[in-house]
Length: 599
Image 1 (cartoon, rainbow, N blue to C red):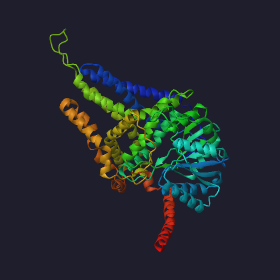
Image 2: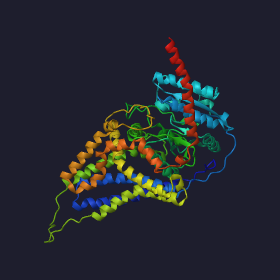
Image 3: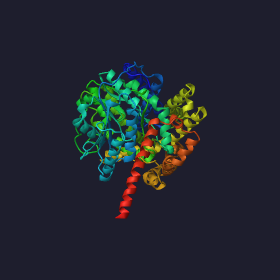
Image 4: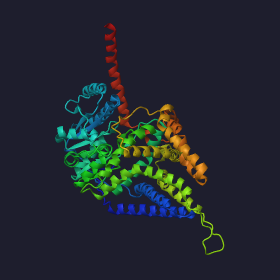
């Protein structure tokens, strides 16, 4: 972790450079594609295809440039800030029908980590429950009493359950601000699966106190605790590439940064004054309470002159993630609806220009998949409606044959693949040359893991594309995702559940293969990399959710992350707290059984 009080350089030149780079790459890709499609004649459908290609290519170029900027621009140097925090901080854990044991074990681990520090009395802890199930609420209250007694935390640990879940998580935080927010200078917002080291929390408070204009400081949560093959794939990618993507984001966002809704420190007064959000007019999914409220809150803080900053060097911040593709898609469904709601906020008055760009980027994170899908459909249709070739132009007695543009098509294909793979390859090379390969299993295993990650993500990409397409379609036809409870089990899926979630993809892929074979055979082999993963989607989703395959990869040292060899201390503390709470429950359970037997 670097010292506190980082000074961010102007992001203007970086933003201009990134926009120019993305535009140039998009222009080159669009021109090459236009050259390919006009080889058999030009029609109106080709205009649609070129437009779709341009939008999709810009999205790829934008992501690639963020990764490259993370390599090119090191983090801004920080000035040392020490001393005891002056203000009090409330550490908030909003929960909603969660598995009670793990949630309170995480909070216990955070409390223990903070209590080891001299600054411990500057921090209070709040469990903000929006739980709707009576049985879960009783478990929460019992766990709260146990945690209160074990840590002797009277006056420092509080539990509150709302009667009505108005506004979901944003409403939960707003309720805290109205009832207790005035007692605290800062609030650290967590998720139910968050873990943070006490030293990291204190460091964040110091950085905020060093800059009176800093309204929100976002750490970089690292994914831990996943055991399935898909989970280990996520952990490997986020551990190896994530810090550099975050550095690229920080480089171009500057003081109009991001908020991911958790593991972030917020200046209470700034948030209360700037971030009140009325529900959008109309019914869900485009109306009602904003689901992805965090992006909007960051924009509102920046609008009022507060700095919103992402500091990628803030380690000691952790989270879990969905361990299989089905649970990942469920979470994405809610995020999709929330991000598409932002289309009604883009024109809000006084928003900073880059805040609008961030909102637009979030929208296209989900629209990109339908755009690619439409591009595939139009490409399959184009040969059927293309005008017949003209062999005699009226000027020459000899036939003029259409010029094949195979070389240009291959160059375009390799260029698009390079946009996806080159930044990752550069990061692997940087890790190898920087002496950090040992943390990822050593040079040989790192390279092999990189190849496995590229292959698996490429194979699974069409499946994720279809999940996104379905989510976007559901939003546009008016289906509301509601507020689904997070599934935090080990992540394994039975084959039946995988089939139930993806059978429609298999049919879509099979239909695409059959259509191409009979009507546009010239595109048959080009379509297979997309269609075959869809045909085998149930099997792929089931296999990647396997804990056994994840364990095999761990034992072989593949998809390794630094936490495999050096477990996270606070995660180990969380597991100890969970075992302790379960041990305490067993005698009471036994006494209840004895009493029942006597009766």
